Image (tube, rainbow, N blue to C red; front, side, top):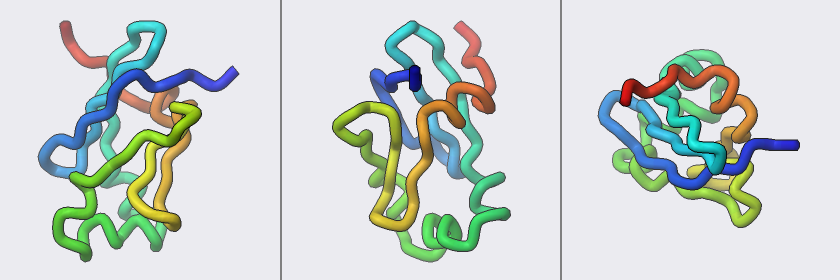
Amino acid sequence: MLPRIKEVKPLPNFILSVIFDDGKAVIYDVMDDIKQIESYQDLIAIHGLFNQVQLDKSRTCVFWNDRIDLPSDTIYEYGRLQEA
């Protein structure tokens, strides 16, 4: 079962703060994806796009536009735990 996202917030330097329904809270560095995935480079090239991150209706994916999305299981697995 895919983890469901409760809340997502964009932070400076292409970082996402994500809280899941089970209470896990992580910091996810999108810069790693920007460096590796060509379409993600729009997050740098288009001013303000990164801050427009949205949560899909199923709450299992965050997205910026129809070309850039990030599944919740990737964030859950690779995100760095936030300190309380």
